[in-house]
Figure 1: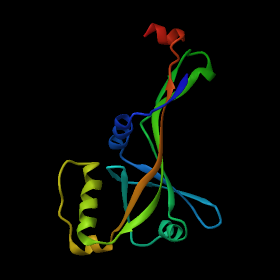
Figure 2: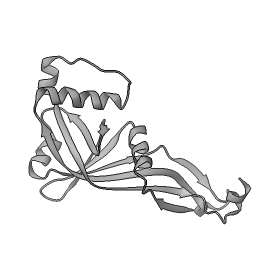
Figure 3: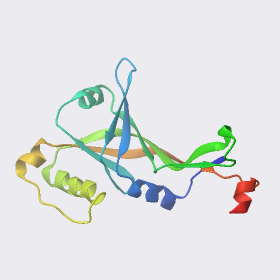
Figure 4: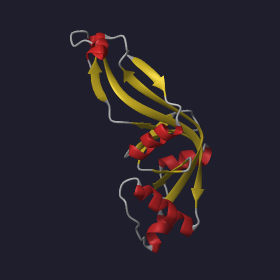
Length: 164
């Protein structure tokens, strides 16, 4: 089975827009990794996240705002030969982004970003109470680098590929 890089921006954006959660990786001052699953929104090369106004992630980000954000489509178990364990593999696509978190404090922009995040899940606009907007922490991550892969692709010379 093969792994291929995905270079086309449209394919990468399709993956980002199809996912429900992302995994955000941080590194604390001692170099200890910390990873959280988070809801997100995506628009124009920026990943938007939200959280409570305090917590471990925010304490880490005060020291080091660099993050790695990972997405992975639902994997499918495939094989080239059902009797050969080493021929089994997960077929999926992944995206890995790096960037720096910048916190948004302006009220109207926070509302706009909350709607971007909600559009990831439902196709409607929302209204938000003043205290809800005031108390949410909005993260903006402009994508500095991005890599995407499709893995578990059947090799074109495999018998099972030719049978399809």
